Length: 246
Image (cartoon, rainbow, N blue to C red; front, side, top):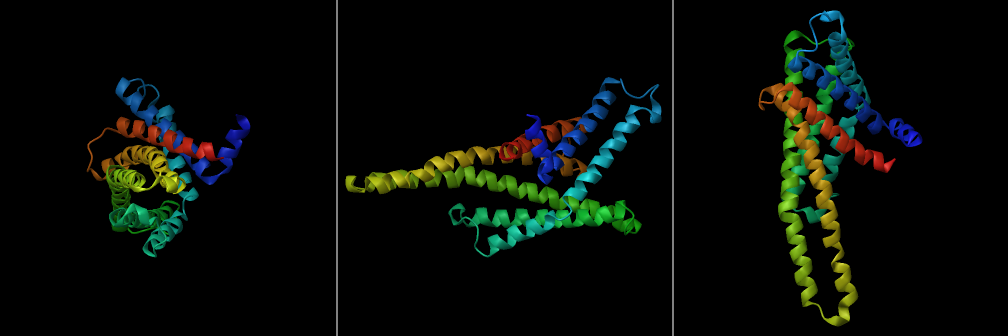
């Protein structure tokens, strides 16, 4: 268990998820204390409330350093799909949604790097830009998660059903002499069911994550406590997938 944890935290995605879980714990600590009335009072600004707030901000800043070059991977995925390197079985609309998702994510990470330069005082931005860029970055993050959810819904509702029906009809039309080919043609059906489960997990993660930019922009009316709970859920689900691969 300990060796597995060490391998997990040695990877950049694993370390980022660890910091994200700690950041979500800080959010929950602050919000639960506010709702229950336990925090504050005698603790004041010099107590645990302030420390949890500082920890939340510093953990978020650290996570930005870990993903400062993620925009390159996002743009690379988007250009690869434009070049036809994607899965053609997904269909045209699913591919377009994937291109839009990775493109918006790339712009989000790029704008986030500009904000990082401002927050670290490496390249301070003037007052209008220091407020506009975070807003635009969260818009692109919201759009990316929205495209991802639409793509997941399209794949589960249409692509999976069409592939299953096609395989079934193809198997019924084949002669007994082609049983080997017929059995091979049914393999995509099994893969489709496995992929559907993974897609639903990803949709759960995206559905929880979209609360963060949605509340920041005022487009989704959810309390900070709800955002913290969603952040914990998405981190545990996505982190578990990384945990299984290390």
